[in-house]
Image (cartoon, rainbow over all chains, first blue to last red):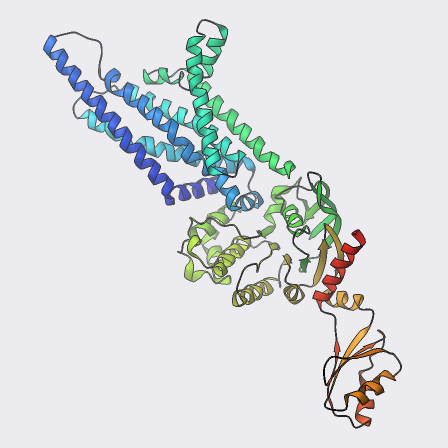
Length: 253
Length: 311
């Protein structure tokens, strides 16, 4: 597992795809951060002018929109990070090396998945610099920051599990990315249907399996067993499906 | 070392390999010979446990390639067809990954890496990107990854495919050096290569083994007559008459002005008799030799015979 993990990281950090993705991600996340800073300062000016007392604080004006924005970016960028994991090996034939080395399918998958999580973590982690900038001019509720990042990583991990699953289905990286994006968006719009059907059992069910609904708690500073269990279960389920797909290469011929 | 028993592989309705059985002994070099699509690569992929057989069993060093796959894989170094490699990695980093994937302890990795890179002549390019290497060097990297854990069994699928003559020579020399201590199965459709490198040759066609023997026995077994080539300096017609009259000569034909092809019955070697008669007749004898059927001819004969039976 360790050997595959390190090899995947090596390839990530020596390929231009990662740098392109990270560059776009950080540029746009920076714009989001700037926007929320500006609206916070405008709001602060209004509050000072009209002497309103309000409960709205830093968390709601800056952190919530920033985390929401990063979440959307992750949604679009994960498919590009995950598409190569298996599809590239199949296209180049190196899958023949991987499957004839004395490594179990599980350890290969774990190595690949964890390398993806690490890369995602590095990208999201860099945005923690914004918090340091913020700290110079305001007091930050660090609890919300930590739970927010935890939520982002869990959601990114769920997206990545979809991505590695899609990548195991095909030898074409573009197809893998498109399937991943489709699956992620599918699990996203389910939330919309949930609103329409709210009040019914179906509505409740759809709300529970929507990938974004479970994020709200984390952004408010709450870690609930239900949300964590949902993401972990989701990840394990799709990694399990991936293993079954990989196994099928042995009998499909 | 390798025992294949009743191996069959179907791809959907198509049968790629049909009920083949053979064994490879320790230290032996077995050559797999056959036209494209005959089932060479399929057989090798099954031996390396990349895919399981439809029926039949393969054991490597006593480990079943399906039930005991991980242990069987530990004994094998595999160079797949077309030599797939990670283009984005540098040679040393790639081999280091392979070494750790094959379970070589960190403390021994550096020593092992140096040895293998030296053995394969890669020391000069160890910091180079694999994508930038020439085909010859890529092939050496492919061999190095197969050799890194010093496996007792090597499976090489078309190791000289697409190389230039000098590179082919070098890779062959390397394989020859490796064969002293290892069991090797290699496939090829270059016939001289197989006869040079291998102790035994398995000719495979349409998924079935049509012959398996040493190159010498294959050659001997298939000839139903021996041929002798005689080169004379002058008086060709007289020579033909003298030789045709000898007992045991089946047919004499002339290739050009001074070369005679003499077909004789298989058991006897008529060279001394022919030489004596020609010299006695005062005809200048320039050359006399026995011509053996080349592996190429045997291959063509076996493969085309098979095809005509099918038709």
